[in-house]
Length: 119
Image (cartoon, rainbow, N blue to C red; front, side, top):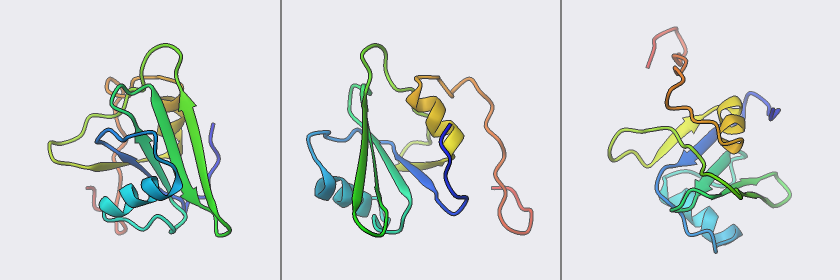
């Protein structure tokens, strides 16, 4: 299981990404999502065939890219509303996605805003 501080958020880009890109192109994709790639959060991208996944983040001293290519099967990313370009996931969900486990049949937890109001 991934162990991350609670302040780190994980964003999954829903649209397929060209995996030939590296640090600068992936950081540009993060900016295109309206986010700051140097904020310390993790940004997850998958290719069109959903066999390659890259995670990019900035750790205050430089860029880090983690990559995984599946030999069999595909990454099962969560379903989102039409037009939604990114989705927030937690570390446990990312770990399950990396293992190829389909989250679509699993019930999602209700997330709460400050003050107890649900989203």
